[in-house]
Length: 384
Image 1: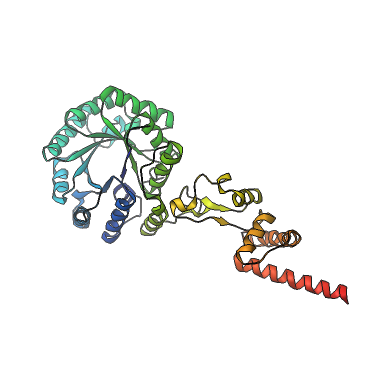
Image 2: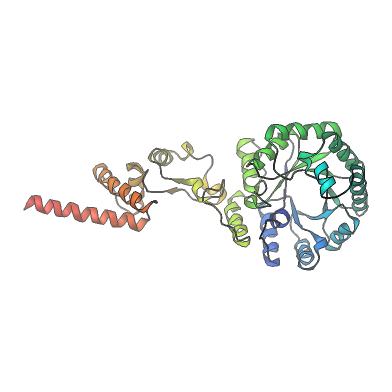
């Protein structure tokens, strides 16, 4: 992959469409600033036609002078685009369904009408010098022949790219690759991957589309989004860097910070096991793993924790070994002999089973103090 890859983050639009999520204007503005700071190329800031607070905060984001393109989301309706123009955005997404199930049951329309509405909206936006992404909603369930015709008309109407939407997350990476390559080879339009995560393949499908020639990756912070969410910003950027050799130059050390902020603002927990930014990414308990990580972190870590704003943790619990225990006590300034470590390990494992969790530092110190006290008493008995 030698061509550039660009990131379009839609946390403030698709992310906020998560059931039960509402960002305050202050939060939306701060998230936009954080996204621009880490390196996001384009920020989909919201839906201007909603008016009120939504329109107000989109204007504020535009006026913030961020080093990112600011996009407004629109239906294929000219009046929607007028609202985007009011906000001063430099780019618009024009969205309309292309699958027959959506056209018939949601739009109560026809294929011909869909193409006509899309083309009219696109031409209007281009007359006002806007960058245009034409969104093929439910593209993954669309008839391929019709989707190619839709893409061709979009290009002729001036669209800068086609957003290929896996709206219900039903693609697999092999199908994603084939369909995107077909669109690019046949129509010659730039493509954005906008993948949902219903089957847990949003990031994989995004990477497959990029391999096929797509130039944009549509993402959200921590994969926030409707139902199972979208492809996650941090996953796509780090996978590009470490798996595909494409370094976008992002400030990845700020990923944990922005993930925590978006999680709090959305009222969602950030799971410890979350890929890339979860604390368990660099937490080692298993004796073999902890021993390997202590000797050389690359044995069980693909990249350094500092690269995404995290720290390595050696967790002491049921599955720990003596190497981890000795390393942990060394942090307290206590050097354990192998004999003491082995004796303590039995007590540590028993406590972890009783508590059904790993142990806190204070608990380890208490166990150590009890062990010293017991050993001293045994020594006194032997001397006596």
